[in-house]
Image (cartoon, rainbow, N blue to C red; front, top):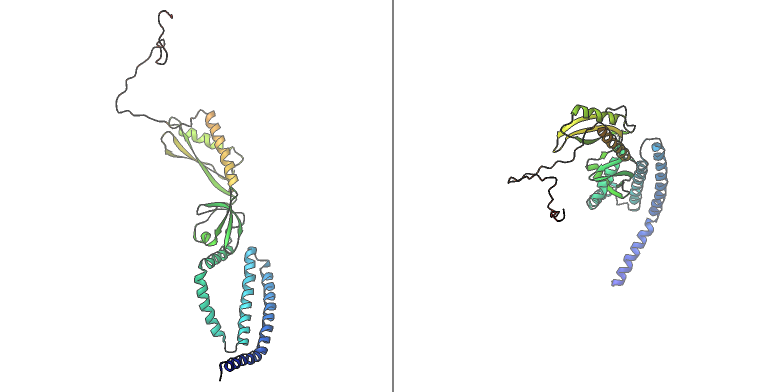
Length: 301
Protein backbone atom coordinates (compact mmCIF):
# COMPACT_ATOMS: atom_id res chain seq x y z
CA UNK A 1 0.00 0.00 0.00
CA UNK A 2 1.39 3.34 -1.02
CA UNK A 3 1.82 6.36 1.21
CA UNK A 4 -0.93 8.17 -0.67
CA UNK A 5 -3.40 5.41 0.06
CA UNK A 6 -2.52 5.46 3.76
CA UNK A 7 -3.00 9.24 3.88
CA UNK A 8 -6.36 9.05 2.10
CA UNK A 9 -7.56 6.29 4.45
CA UNK A 10 -6.66 8.38 7.49
CA UNK A 11 -8.42 11.43 6.07
CA UNK A 12 -11.50 9.34 5.32
CA UNK A 13 -11.47 7.94 8.83
CA UNK A 14 -11.27 11.46 10.28
CA UNK A 15 -14.13 12.62 8.07
CA UNK A 16 -16.38 9.73 9.05
CA UNK A 17 -15.55 10.34 12.69
CA UNK A 18 -16.47 14.01 12.30
CA UNK A 19 -19.76 13.06 10.64
CA UNK A 20 -20.46 10.69 13.52
CA UNK A 21 -19.81 13.47 16.02
CA UNK A 22 -22.10 15.98 14.34
CA UNK A 23 -25.12 15.09 16.55
CA UNK A 24 -22.92 15.42 19.64
CA UNK A 25 -21.55 18.76 18.40
CA UNK A 26 -25.11 19.99 17.82
CA UNK A 27 -26.12 18.97 21.32
CA UNK A 28 -22.98 20.69 22.70
CA UNK A 29 -23.85 23.92 20.86
CA UNK A 30 -27.35 23.76 22.29
CA UNK A 31 -25.82 23.27 25.76
CA UNK A 32 -23.61 26.34 25.21
CA UNK A 33 -26.66 28.44 24.32
CA UNK A 34 -28.53 27.09 27.35
CA UNK A 35 -25.47 27.87 29.51
CA UNK A 36 -25.47 31.48 28.27
CA UNK A 37 -29.16 31.83 29.13
CA UNK A 38 -28.71 30.23 32.56
CA UNK A 39 -25.68 32.43 33.28
CA UNK A 40 -27.67 35.56 32.41
CA UNK A 41 -30.56 34.40 34.60
CA UNK A 42 -28.24 33.62 37.52
CA UNK A 43 -26.60 37.04 37.22
CA UNK A 44 -29.98 38.73 37.42
CA UNK A 45 -30.90 36.68 40.49
CA UNK A 46 -27.57 37.53 42.13
CA UNK A 47 -28.05 41.22 41.30
CA UNK A 48 -31.48 41.20 42.94
CA UNK A 49 -30.16 39.45 46.04
CA UNK A 50 -27.29 41.94 46.43
CA UNK A 51 -29.31 45.00 45.45
CA UNK A 52 -30.40 45.80 48.99
CA UNK A 53 -27.23 44.55 50.67
CA UNK A 54 -24.97 47.17 52.24
CA UNK A 55 -21.88 46.27 50.22
CA UNK A 56 -19.73 48.14 47.73
CA UNK A 57 -20.77 48.31 44.09
CA UNK A 58 -17.53 46.65 43.01
CA UNK A 59 -18.25 43.76 45.38
CA UNK A 60 -21.70 43.36 43.83
CA UNK A 61 -20.07 43.18 40.41
CA UNK A 62 -17.67 40.56 41.76
CA UNK A 63 -20.57 38.37 42.95
CA UNK A 64 -22.23 38.62 39.53
CA UNK A 65 -18.97 37.73 37.78
CA UNK A 66 -18.26 34.74 40.04
CA UNK A 67 -21.78 33.36 39.53
CA UNK A 68 -21.49 33.75 35.77
CA UNK A 69 -18.06 32.09 35.65
CA UNK A 70 -19.28 29.17 37.76
CA UNK A 71 -22.25 28.56 35.45
CA UNK A 72 -20.05 28.74 32.35
CA UNK A 73 -17.48 26.32 33.77
CA UNK A 74 -20.16 23.73 34.56
CA UNK A 75 -21.86 24.20 31.19
CA UNK A 76 -18.64 23.94 29.17
CA UNK A 77 -17.59 20.81 31.09
CA UNK A 78 -20.90 19.15 30.24
CA UNK A 79 -20.61 20.20 26.58
CA UNK A 80 -17.05 18.85 26.40
CA UNK A 81 -18.10 15.45 27.76
CA UNK A 82 -20.93 15.30 25.15
CA UNK A 83 -18.56 16.04 22.25
CA UNK A 84 -15.86 13.70 23.55
CA UNK A 85 -17.56 10.71 25.20
CA UNK A 86 -14.23 9.35 26.41
CA UNK A 87 -13.66 12.51 28.44
CA UNK A 88 -15.07 12.09 31.96
CA UNK A 89 -15.76 14.83 34.53
CA UNK A 90 -13.09 13.30 36.77
CA UNK A 91 -10.41 13.70 34.10
CA UNK A 92 -11.57 17.26 33.44
CA UNK A 93 -11.35 18.14 37.13
CA UNK A 94 -7.88 16.57 37.34
CA UNK A 95 -6.75 18.55 34.29
CA UNK A 96 -8.18 21.75 35.72
CA UNK A 97 -6.37 21.09 38.98
CA UNK A 98 -2.98 20.75 37.29
CA UNK A 99 -3.71 23.80 35.14
CA UNK A 100 -4.78 25.82 38.15
CA UNK A 101 -1.50 25.08 39.93
CA UNK A 102 0.52 26.18 36.90
CA UNK A 103 -1.57 29.33 36.49
CA UNK A 104 -1.30 30.04 40.21
CA UNK A 105 2.50 30.04 40.10
CA UNK A 106 2.55 32.15 36.96
CA UNK A 107 0.10 34.75 38.28
CA UNK A 108 0.89 34.62 41.99
CA UNK A 109 1.02 38.39 42.47
CA UNK A 110 -2.18 38.89 40.48
CA UNK A 111 -4.17 36.41 42.55
CA UNK A 112 -2.65 37.76 45.76
CA UNK A 113 -3.86 41.28 44.95
CA UNK A 114 -7.20 39.86 43.75
CA UNK A 115 -7.89 38.01 47.00
CA UNK A 116 -6.67 41.00 49.04
CA UNK A 117 -9.11 43.20 47.12
CA UNK A 118 -11.99 40.85 47.95
CA UNK A 119 -11.08 40.86 51.64
CA UNK A 120 -10.75 44.67 51.70
CA UNK A 121 -14.20 45.02 50.14
CA UNK A 122 -15.75 42.52 52.55
CA UNK A 123 -14.09 44.20 55.54
CA UNK A 124 -15.55 47.59 54.53
CA UNK A 125 -13.46 49.52 57.04
CA UNK A 126 -11.74 51.66 54.44
CA UNK A 127 -14.26 53.70 52.45
CA UNK A 128 -14.12 55.88 49.36
CA UNK A 129 -13.12 59.39 50.44
CA UNK A 130 -11.18 58.32 53.55
CA UNK A 131 -7.80 59.91 54.21
CA UNK A 132 -5.28 57.13 54.86
CA UNK A 133 -1.59 56.62 55.52
CA UNK A 134 0.24 53.38 54.64
CA UNK A 135 3.94 52.79 54.03
CA UNK A 136 4.62 56.48 53.55
CA UNK A 137 1.63 56.91 51.20
CA UNK A 138 -0.69 59.64 52.47
CA UNK A 139 -3.80 60.65 50.56
CA UNK A 140 -7.49 60.21 49.94
CA UNK A 141 -9.01 56.94 48.63
CA UNK A 142 -10.62 57.53 45.23
CA UNK A 143 -11.33 54.02 43.93
CA UNK A 144 -11.11 50.43 45.19
CA UNK A 145 -10.98 47.66 42.58
CA UNK A 146 -10.29 43.94 42.85
CA UNK A 147 -6.58 44.38 42.15
CA UNK A 148 -5.56 47.91 43.16
CA UNK A 149 -6.62 50.98 45.08
CA UNK A 150 -6.30 54.54 43.80
CA UNK A 151 -5.03 56.99 46.44
CA UNK A 152 -4.99 60.68 45.55
CA UNK A 153 -2.27 62.54 47.45
CA UNK A 154 -3.13 65.87 49.01
CA UNK A 155 -0.75 67.49 46.50
CA UNK A 156 -3.04 66.00 43.75
CA UNK A 157 -0.76 63.19 42.51
CA UNK A 158 -2.42 59.80 42.01
CA UNK A 159 -0.82 56.72 43.58
CA UNK A 160 -1.94 53.25 42.43
CA UNK A 161 -1.42 50.91 45.38
CA UNK A 162 -1.62 47.10 45.03
CA UNK A 163 -4.27 45.71 47.35
CA UNK A 164 -1.79 43.27 48.88
CA UNK A 165 0.19 46.27 50.19
CA UNK A 166 -2.87 47.65 51.96
CA UNK A 167 -3.82 44.23 53.30
CA UNK A 168 -0.41 43.14 54.63
CA UNK A 169 0.70 46.48 56.11
CA UNK A 170 -0.86 48.65 58.82
CA UNK A 171 -3.20 51.26 57.36
CA UNK A 172 -3.93 54.38 59.40
CA UNK A 173 -7.39 55.71 58.51
CA UNK A 174 -7.26 59.37 59.50
CA UNK A 175 -10.96 60.06 58.88
CA UNK A 176 -12.43 56.94 60.47
CA UNK A 177 -14.15 59.20 63.04
CA UNK A 178 -15.45 62.75 62.55
CA UNK A 179 -13.01 64.13 65.14
CA UNK A 180 -9.49 63.30 66.24
CA UNK A 181 -6.92 64.72 68.61
CA UNK A 182 -4.19 67.14 67.53
CA UNK A 183 -1.23 68.46 69.47
CA UNK A 184 1.64 70.95 69.38
CA UNK A 185 4.64 71.68 71.63
CA UNK A 186 5.09 75.16 73.17
CA UNK A 187 8.15 76.28 75.13
CA UNK A 188 8.31 79.00 77.83
CA UNK A 189 11.33 80.48 79.55
CA UNK A 190 12.73 78.98 82.75
CA UNK A 191 11.79 81.97 84.87
CA UNK A 192 8.09 81.54 84.06
CA UNK A 193 5.61 80.25 86.62
CA UNK A 194 4.47 77.01 85.01
CA UNK A 195 0.99 77.00 86.55
CA UNK A 196 0.32 80.49 85.22
CA UNK A 197 1.63 79.58 81.79
CA UNK A 198 -0.54 76.44 81.66
CA UNK A 199 -3.65 78.43 82.62
CA UNK A 200 -2.96 81.07 79.97
CA UNK A 201 -2.43 78.45 77.26
CA UNK A 202 -5.54 76.48 78.22
CA UNK A 203 -7.75 79.59 78.29
CA UNK A 204 -6.45 80.69 74.88
CA UNK A 205 -7.19 77.30 73.29
CA UNK A 206 -10.58 76.82 74.95
CA UNK A 207 -11.78 80.15 73.59
CA UNK A 208 -11.43 79.07 69.96
CA UNK A 209 -14.41 78.05 67.83
CA UNK A 210 -12.44 75.59 65.67
CA UNK A 211 -11.93 73.07 68.48
CA UNK A 212 -14.41 70.47 69.73
CA UNK A 213 -16.04 71.99 72.84
CA UNK A 214 -17.23 68.65 74.22
CA UNK A 215 -13.65 67.38 74.58
CA UNK A 216 -11.19 68.72 77.11
CA UNK A 217 -8.03 70.65 76.30
CA UNK A 218 -4.88 69.13 77.80
CA UNK A 219 -1.81 71.17 78.72
CA UNK A 220 1.02 69.05 80.13
CA UNK A 221 4.54 70.07 81.08
CA UNK A 222 6.62 67.81 78.86
CA UNK A 223 10.36 68.24 79.41
CA UNK A 224 13.26 70.53 80.24
CA UNK A 225 14.62 71.64 76.89
CA UNK A 226 17.88 73.45 76.18
CA UNK A 227 16.38 76.94 76.43
CA UNK A 228 12.82 76.37 77.59
CA UNK A 229 10.36 74.26 79.53
CA UNK A 230 8.14 72.59 76.94
CA UNK A 231 4.39 72.06 77.19
CA UNK A 232 2.37 69.55 75.14
CA UNK A 233 -0.96 71.08 74.15
CA UNK A 234 -3.68 68.69 72.93
CA UNK A 235 -7.15 69.43 71.63
CA UNK A 236 -9.86 67.79 69.50
CA UNK A 237 -10.99 69.01 66.10
CA UNK A 238 -12.12 67.68 62.72
CA UNK A 239 -10.35 64.61 61.38
CA UNK A 240 -9.83 65.93 57.85
CA UNK A 241 -6.36 67.27 56.97
CA UNK A 242 -7.78 70.73 56.30
CA UNK A 243 -9.41 70.73 59.74
CA UNK A 244 -6.08 69.79 61.29
CA UNK A 245 -4.20 72.64 59.59
CA UNK A 246 -6.95 75.17 60.30
CA UNK A 247 -7.21 74.35 63.99
CA UNK A 248 -3.44 74.21 64.43
CA UNK A 249 -3.05 77.62 62.83
CA UNK A 250 -5.72 79.08 65.12
CA UNK A 251 -4.19 77.49 68.25
CA UNK A 252 -0.67 78.71 67.49
CA UNK A 253 -1.88 82.27 66.85
CA UNK A 254 -4.09 82.35 69.96
CA UNK A 255 -1.41 80.95 72.29
CA UNK A 256 1.26 83.31 70.94
CA UNK A 257 -1.02 86.32 71.45
CA UNK A 258 -2.05 85.20 74.96
CA UNK A 259 1.53 84.63 76.09
CA UNK A 260 2.60 88.03 74.75
CA UNK A 261 -0.25 89.77 76.57
CA UNK A 262 0.75 88.14 79.87
CA UNK A 263 4.45 88.87 79.44
CA UNK A 264 5.43 85.23 79.14
CA UNK A 265 8.47 84.71 76.95
CA UNK A 266 8.76 82.08 74.24
CA UNK A 267 12.56 81.96 74.28
CA UNK A 268 14.95 81.77 71.40
CA UNK A 269 17.69 79.12 71.74
CA UNK A 270 20.39 80.39 74.09
CA UNK A 271 24.03 79.73 73.16
CA UNK A 272 26.82 79.53 75.74
CA UNK A 273 30.41 79.93 74.45
CA UNK A 274 33.25 78.34 76.44
CA UNK A 275 36.88 79.38 75.88
CA UNK A 276 39.88 77.32 76.98
CA UNK A 277 41.89 80.42 77.93
CA UNK A 278 40.71 83.36 79.98
CA UNK A 279 39.88 86.45 77.97
CA UNK A 280 40.78 89.93 79.17
CA UNK A 281 37.91 92.37 79.32
CA UNK A 282 38.63 96.07 78.96
CA UNK A 283 36.12 98.82 79.61
CA UNK A 284 36.30 101.69 77.16
CA UNK A 285 35.61 105.29 78.17
CA UNK A 286 32.71 106.94 76.47
CA UNK A 287 34.93 109.73 75.12
CA UNK A 288 37.65 107.32 73.99
CA UNK A 289 37.84 106.74 70.23
CA UNK A 290 36.87 103.36 68.92
CA UNK A 291 39.31 101.17 67.03
CA UNK A 292 37.64 101.95 63.72
CA UNK A 293 37.75 105.75 64.26
CA UNK A 294 40.95 107.84 63.96
CA UNK A 295 41.96 109.84 67.02
CA UNK A 296 41.52 113.61 66.82
CA UNK A 297 44.66 115.72 67.01
CA UNK A 298 44.98 118.94 69.02
CA UNK A 299 44.92 120.99 65.85
CA UNK A 300 41.61 119.42 64.87
CA UNK A 301 40.21 120.25 68.25
